[in-house]
Length: 340
Image 1 (cartoon, one colour):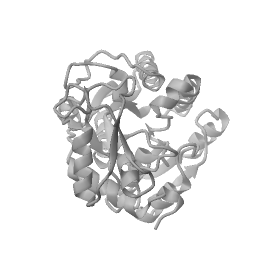
Image 2 (cartoon, one colour):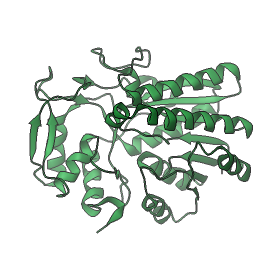
Image 3 (cartoon, rainbow, N blue to C red):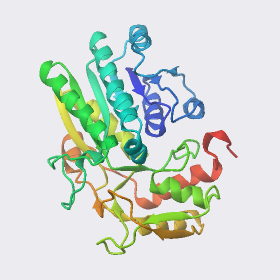
Image 4 (spheres, rainbow, N blue to C red):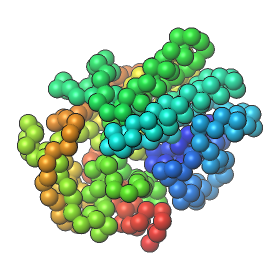
Protein backbone atom coordinates (compact mmCIF):
# COMPACT_ATOMS: atom_id res chain seq x y z
CA UNK A 1 0.00 0.00 0.00
CA UNK A 2 1.20 3.49 -0.91
CA UNK A 3 0.09 6.90 0.33
CA UNK A 4 -0.85 9.47 -2.32
CA UNK A 5 -1.81 13.12 -2.04
CA UNK A 6 -4.53 14.20 -4.49
CA UNK A 7 -4.82 17.97 -4.84
CA UNK A 8 -8.23 19.03 -6.10
CA UNK A 9 -9.48 15.63 -4.98
CA UNK A 10 -13.05 16.86 -4.48
CA UNK A 11 -13.23 18.01 -8.10
CA UNK A 12 -14.47 16.17 -11.17
CA UNK A 13 -11.35 14.28 -12.24
CA UNK A 14 -9.67 14.25 -8.84
CA UNK A 15 -12.64 12.54 -7.17
CA UNK A 16 -12.62 9.74 -9.75
CA UNK A 17 -8.87 9.38 -9.18
CA UNK A 18 -9.45 8.99 -5.44
CA UNK A 19 -11.86 6.12 -6.06
CA UNK A 20 -9.36 4.26 -8.25
CA UNK A 21 -6.57 4.69 -5.69
CA UNK A 22 -8.75 3.59 -2.76
CA UNK A 23 -10.05 0.57 -4.68
CA UNK A 24 -6.44 -0.39 -5.38
CA UNK A 25 -5.79 -0.43 -1.63
CA UNK A 26 -3.85 2.83 -1.31
CA UNK A 27 -4.15 5.54 1.32
CA UNK A 28 -5.41 8.87 -0.03
CA UNK A 29 -4.83 12.39 1.26
CA UNK A 30 -7.14 14.96 -0.36
CA UNK A 31 -6.36 18.67 -0.51
CA UNK A 32 -9.16 20.89 -1.85
CA UNK A 33 -10.33 24.41 -1.01
CA UNK A 34 -13.83 23.60 -2.35
CA UNK A 35 -13.86 26.76 -4.48
CA UNK A 36 -15.26 24.82 -7.45
CA UNK A 37 -16.31 21.55 -5.81
CA UNK A 38 -18.30 20.33 -2.83
CA UNK A 39 -18.23 17.93 0.08
CA UNK A 40 -20.83 15.92 -1.81
CA UNK A 41 -18.09 14.37 -3.93
CA UNK A 42 -16.05 13.45 -0.84
CA UNK A 43 -19.13 11.80 0.66
CA UNK A 44 -19.70 9.93 -2.63
CA UNK A 45 -16.11 8.67 -2.67
CA UNK A 46 -16.47 7.30 0.85
CA UNK A 47 -19.87 5.80 0.08
CA UNK A 48 -18.78 4.12 -3.17
CA UNK A 49 -15.56 2.66 -1.80
CA UNK A 50 -16.55 2.04 1.82
CA UNK A 51 -13.09 3.29 2.69
CA UNK A 52 -11.58 6.10 4.69
CA UNK A 53 -9.70 9.01 3.21
CA UNK A 54 -8.06 12.05 4.78
CA UNK A 55 -9.61 15.33 3.69
CA UNK A 56 -8.09 18.75 4.27
CA UNK A 57 -10.18 21.81 3.22
CA UNK A 58 -7.02 23.67 2.33
CA UNK A 59 -5.79 26.12 -0.30
CA UNK A 60 -2.42 25.13 -1.75
CA UNK A 61 -1.15 28.67 -1.23
CA UNK A 62 -1.51 28.20 2.55
CA UNK A 63 2.12 27.20 2.96
CA UNK A 64 2.25 26.59 6.76
CA UNK A 65 -0.84 24.37 6.80
CA UNK A 66 0.25 22.45 3.71
CA UNK A 67 3.57 21.77 5.42
CA UNK A 68 1.75 20.27 8.42
CA UNK A 69 -0.06 17.87 6.07
CA UNK A 70 3.21 16.64 4.56
CA UNK A 71 4.63 16.28 8.07
CA UNK A 72 1.62 14.22 9.21
CA UNK A 73 1.70 11.61 6.43
CA UNK A 74 4.35 9.48 4.71
CA UNK A 75 3.33 10.62 1.22
CA UNK A 76 5.04 8.87 -1.70
CA UNK A 77 3.65 10.83 -4.64
CA UNK A 78 1.31 13.70 -5.50
CA UNK A 79 -1.36 13.77 -8.19
CA UNK A 80 -1.95 17.45 -8.86
CA UNK A 81 -5.44 18.29 -10.19
CA UNK A 82 -6.09 21.51 -8.23
CA UNK A 83 -6.63 24.58 -10.39
CA UNK A 84 -9.17 26.91 -11.93
CA UNK A 85 -10.16 25.85 -15.44
CA UNK A 86 -12.72 28.17 -17.07
CA UNK A 87 -11.24 29.73 -20.21
CA UNK A 88 -13.66 32.70 -20.34
CA UNK A 89 -13.07 33.49 -16.68
CA UNK A 90 -9.32 33.36 -17.22
CA UNK A 91 -9.63 35.97 -19.98
CA UNK A 92 -11.67 38.32 -17.79
CA UNK A 93 -9.62 37.74 -14.63
CA UNK A 94 -6.12 36.57 -15.64
CA UNK A 95 -4.38 37.47 -12.38
CA UNK A 96 -6.72 35.12 -10.51
CA UNK A 97 -5.55 32.24 -12.72
CA UNK A 98 -1.86 33.03 -12.43
CA UNK A 99 -2.14 33.40 -8.67
CA UNK A 100 -4.26 30.30 -8.06
CA UNK A 101 -2.81 27.92 -10.65
CA UNK A 102 0.82 28.98 -10.89
CA UNK A 103 1.44 30.24 -7.35
CA UNK A 104 -0.41 27.28 -5.87
CA UNK A 105 1.71 24.85 -7.88
CA UNK A 106 4.90 26.65 -6.84
CA UNK A 107 4.03 26.34 -3.15
CA UNK A 108 3.14 22.67 -3.65
CA UNK A 109 6.50 21.89 -5.27
CA UNK A 110 8.37 23.79 -2.54
CA UNK A 111 6.64 21.81 0.18
CA UNK A 112 7.15 18.53 -1.67
CA UNK A 113 10.87 19.25 -1.85
CA UNK A 114 11.01 20.02 1.88
CA UNK A 115 9.25 16.74 2.63
CA UNK A 116 11.46 14.87 0.12
CA UNK A 117 8.41 13.83 -1.91
CA UNK A 118 9.68 14.00 -5.48
CA UNK A 119 7.14 12.12 -7.60
CA UNK A 120 4.42 14.21 -9.22
CA UNK A 121 1.76 13.67 -11.88
CA UNK A 122 0.51 17.02 -13.16
CA UNK A 123 -2.90 17.63 -14.71
CA UNK A 124 -2.03 19.72 -17.75
CA UNK A 125 -4.19 20.45 -20.79
CA UNK A 126 -4.28 20.33 -24.57
CA UNK A 127 -4.92 24.08 -24.39
CA UNK A 128 -1.12 24.50 -24.17
CA UNK A 129 -1.00 23.80 -27.94
CA UNK A 130 -3.20 26.73 -28.90
CA UNK A 131 -4.51 27.04 -32.45
CA UNK A 132 -3.22 24.63 -35.07
CA UNK A 133 -4.32 23.13 -38.36
CA UNK A 134 -2.07 20.08 -37.99
CA UNK A 135 -4.01 17.01 -36.87
CA UNK A 136 -3.65 14.88 -34.89
CA UNK A 137 -1.66 16.81 -32.28
CA UNK A 138 1.52 15.15 -31.03
CA UNK A 139 3.57 16.08 -27.97
CA UNK A 140 6.18 17.60 -30.31
CA UNK A 141 3.74 20.20 -31.58
CA UNK A 142 4.73 23.78 -30.67
CA UNK A 143 3.05 25.18 -27.56
CA UNK A 144 1.27 28.50 -28.06
CA UNK A 145 -1.73 28.83 -25.71
CA UNK A 146 -4.18 31.59 -26.60
CA UNK A 147 -5.73 32.30 -23.20
CA UNK A 148 -4.54 32.79 -19.60
CA UNK A 149 -5.83 29.38 -18.52
CA UNK A 150 -3.69 27.61 -21.11
CA UNK A 151 -0.73 29.86 -20.38
CA UNK A 152 -1.00 29.09 -16.66
CA UNK A 153 -0.78 25.35 -17.48
CA UNK A 154 2.24 25.90 -19.71
CA UNK A 155 3.98 28.03 -17.07
CA UNK A 156 3.56 25.21 -14.57
CA UNK A 157 4.91 22.68 -17.08
CA UNK A 158 7.98 24.84 -17.68
CA UNK A 159 8.53 25.29 -13.95
CA UNK A 160 8.37 21.53 -13.43
CA UNK A 161 10.85 20.88 -16.23
CA UNK A 162 13.25 23.35 -14.62
CA UNK A 163 12.84 21.57 -11.28
CA UNK A 164 13.85 18.28 -12.94
CA UNK A 165 16.89 19.90 -14.56
CA UNK A 166 18.03 21.35 -11.24
CA UNK A 167 17.50 18.10 -9.31
CA UNK A 168 17.60 14.80 -11.22
CA UNK A 169 15.98 12.88 -8.36
CA UNK A 170 12.56 14.25 -9.34
CA UNK A 171 10.10 12.12 -11.32
CA UNK A 172 7.40 14.22 -13.00
CA UNK A 173 4.68 13.33 -15.51
CA UNK A 174 2.95 16.07 -17.49
CA UNK A 175 -0.36 14.73 -18.79
CA UNK A 176 -2.06 16.85 -21.44
CA UNK A 177 -5.78 16.09 -21.39
CA UNK A 178 -8.08 16.67 -24.27
CA UNK A 179 -11.81 16.84 -23.32
CA UNK A 180 -12.78 14.81 -20.22
CA UNK A 181 -16.41 13.68 -20.10
CA UNK A 182 -18.55 10.92 -18.60
CA UNK A 183 -19.07 9.90 -15.00
CA UNK A 184 -18.58 7.04 -12.57
CA UNK A 185 -20.35 3.91 -13.75
CA UNK A 186 -22.57 3.93 -10.62
CA UNK A 187 -24.11 7.27 -11.55
CA UNK A 188 -23.24 8.53 -8.06
CA UNK A 189 -20.29 10.71 -9.04
CA UNK A 190 -19.90 13.03 -12.01
CA UNK A 191 -19.16 16.51 -13.26
CA UNK A 192 -20.87 19.16 -11.13
CA UNK A 193 -19.85 22.58 -12.48
CA UNK A 194 -20.71 25.78 -10.65
CA UNK A 195 -22.86 28.14 -12.71
CA UNK A 196 -23.22 27.78 -16.48
CA UNK A 197 -21.10 24.86 -17.78
CA UNK A 198 -18.12 25.74 -19.96
CA UNK A 199 -17.99 22.36 -21.69
CA UNK A 200 -20.26 20.69 -24.22
CA UNK A 201 -21.46 17.49 -22.57
CA UNK A 202 -22.48 19.05 -19.21
CA UNK A 203 -24.31 21.73 -21.21
CA UNK A 204 -26.21 19.09 -23.19
CA UNK A 205 -26.97 17.12 -20.01
CA UNK A 206 -28.36 20.14 -18.18
CA UNK A 207 -30.69 20.98 -21.07
CA UNK A 208 -31.84 17.35 -21.23
CA UNK A 209 -32.64 17.30 -17.51
CA UNK A 210 -34.54 20.59 -17.74
CA UNK A 211 -32.08 22.72 -15.81
CA UNK A 212 -31.46 24.92 -18.87
CA UNK A 213 -33.78 25.73 -21.77
CA UNK A 214 -31.73 25.23 -24.93
CA UNK A 215 -28.22 24.29 -25.98
CA UNK A 216 -26.10 26.93 -27.70
CA UNK A 217 -24.05 25.66 -30.63
CA UNK A 218 -21.29 28.18 -31.25
CA UNK A 219 -20.99 28.29 -35.02
CA UNK A 220 -21.94 25.88 -37.81
CA UNK A 221 -19.77 27.35 -40.55
CA UNK A 222 -16.44 25.74 -39.70
CA UNK A 223 -14.52 23.77 -42.38
CA UNK A 224 -15.69 20.42 -40.94
CA UNK A 225 -18.11 17.85 -42.41
CA UNK A 226 -21.17 19.28 -40.61
CA UNK A 227 -19.84 22.79 -39.94
CA UNK A 228 -19.48 22.40 -36.16
CA UNK A 229 -16.27 22.14 -34.12
CA UNK A 230 -14.58 18.77 -33.72
CA UNK A 231 -12.99 17.73 -30.43
CA UNK A 232 -11.41 14.67 -28.83
CA UNK A 233 -13.59 13.50 -25.92
CA UNK A 234 -12.12 11.11 -23.35
CA UNK A 235 -13.97 9.26 -20.60
CA UNK A 236 -12.95 10.32 -17.10
CA UNK A 237 -12.41 6.65 -16.22
CA UNK A 238 -9.87 6.32 -19.03
CA UNK A 239 -8.23 9.51 -17.84
CA UNK A 240 -7.65 8.31 -14.28
CA UNK A 241 -6.37 4.99 -15.61
CA UNK A 242 -3.77 7.02 -17.49
CA UNK A 243 -2.58 8.51 -14.21
CA UNK A 244 -2.04 5.07 -12.72
CA UNK A 245 0.00 4.13 -15.80
CA UNK A 246 2.01 7.35 -15.43
CA UNK A 247 2.80 6.55 -11.79
CA UNK A 248 4.03 3.10 -12.77
CA UNK A 249 6.14 4.59 -15.56
CA UNK A 250 7.73 7.12 -13.19
CA UNK A 251 8.78 4.35 -10.84
CA UNK A 252 11.33 3.27 -13.46
CA UNK A 253 11.95 6.56 -15.30
CA UNK A 254 13.31 9.56 -13.39
CA UNK A 255 13.09 13.00 -14.95
CA UNK A 256 10.22 14.76 -16.69
CA UNK A 257 7.96 13.20 -19.35
CA UNK A 258 5.02 14.52 -21.37
CA UNK A 259 2.07 12.54 -22.75
CA UNK A 260 -1.20 13.33 -24.47
CA UNK A 261 -4.29 11.63 -23.07
CA UNK A 262 -7.03 11.43 -25.68
CA UNK A 263 -8.80 8.85 -27.82
CA UNK A 264 -7.31 10.04 -31.11
CA UNK A 265 -10.85 10.38 -32.51
CA UNK A 266 -12.59 13.66 -33.18
CA UNK A 267 -16.35 14.16 -32.83
CA UNK A 268 -18.30 17.23 -33.92
CA UNK A 269 -20.72 19.11 -31.69
CA UNK A 270 -23.65 17.68 -33.66
CA UNK A 271 -22.27 14.13 -33.45
CA UNK A 272 -22.00 14.42 -29.67
CA UNK A 273 -25.50 15.90 -29.46
CA UNK A 274 -27.01 13.06 -31.52
CA UNK A 275 -25.08 10.42 -29.55
CA UNK A 276 -26.37 11.89 -26.29
CA UNK A 277 -29.96 11.96 -27.54
CA UNK A 278 -29.66 8.29 -28.49
CA UNK A 279 -28.10 7.33 -25.15
CA UNK A 280 -30.62 9.28 -23.06
CA UNK A 281 -33.75 8.91 -25.17
CA UNK A 282 -34.22 12.66 -24.76
CA UNK A 283 -34.54 15.34 -27.40
CA UNK A 284 -32.21 18.26 -26.70
CA UNK A 285 -33.35 21.56 -28.27
CA UNK A 286 -30.49 23.63 -29.65
CA UNK A 287 -29.83 26.98 -31.30
CA UNK A 288 -26.92 27.88 -33.52
CA UNK A 289 -25.30 31.15 -32.42
CA UNK A 290 -22.15 32.97 -33.45
CA UNK A 291 -18.67 31.51 -33.11
CA UNK A 292 -16.77 31.98 -29.87
CA UNK A 293 -13.42 33.79 -30.18
CA UNK A 294 -10.50 31.37 -30.14
CA UNK A 295 -12.40 28.19 -31.00
CA UNK A 296 -10.41 26.02 -33.41
CA UNK A 297 -12.27 24.05 -36.07
CA UNK A 298 -10.61 20.77 -35.02
CA UNK A 299 -8.56 19.44 -32.13
CA UNK A 300 -7.80 15.80 -31.47
CA UNK A 301 -4.87 13.89 -30.04
CA UNK A 302 -2.17 11.62 -31.24
CA UNK A 303 -1.97 9.45 -28.12
CA UNK A 304 0.44 6.87 -29.58
CA UNK A 305 3.25 7.95 -27.25
CA UNK A 306 1.13 7.20 -24.17
CA UNK A 307 0.29 3.82 -25.68
CA UNK A 308 3.93 2.99 -26.43
CA UNK A 309 5.52 4.28 -23.22
CA UNK A 310 2.77 4.07 -20.59
CA UNK A 311 0.96 1.04 -21.98
CA UNK A 312 -2.23 3.12 -21.91
CA UNK A 313 -5.06 3.38 -24.41
CA UNK A 314 -8.57 4.79 -24.08
CA UNK A 315 -11.19 2.06 -23.78
CA UNK A 316 -14.56 3.84 -23.65
CA UNK A 317 -16.42 5.02 -26.76
CA UNK A 318 -18.69 8.03 -27.24
CA UNK A 319 -21.84 6.01 -26.55
CA UNK A 320 -20.53 4.97 -23.13
CA UNK A 321 -19.43 8.52 -22.35
CA UNK A 322 -22.93 9.81 -23.07
CA UNK A 323 -24.71 7.01 -21.22
CA UNK A 324 -22.62 7.53 -18.08
CA UNK A 325 -22.98 11.33 -18.21
CA UNK A 326 -26.76 10.97 -18.49
CA UNK A 327 -26.98 8.41 -15.68
CA UNK A 328 -25.25 10.90 -13.38
CA UNK A 329 -27.20 13.95 -14.52
CA UNK A 330 -30.63 12.31 -14.57
CA UNK A 331 -30.29 11.16 -10.95
CA UNK A 332 -28.57 14.37 -9.84
CA UNK A 333 -30.33 17.17 -11.76
CA UNK A 334 -28.89 19.76 -9.37
CA UNK A 335 -25.57 17.98 -8.91
CA UNK A 336 -24.64 17.20 -5.34
CA UNK A 337 -26.87 20.00 -4.06
CA UNK A 338 -30.08 18.07 -4.61
CA UNK A 339 -29.82 14.40 -5.54
CA UNK A 340 -33.05 12.59 -6.45
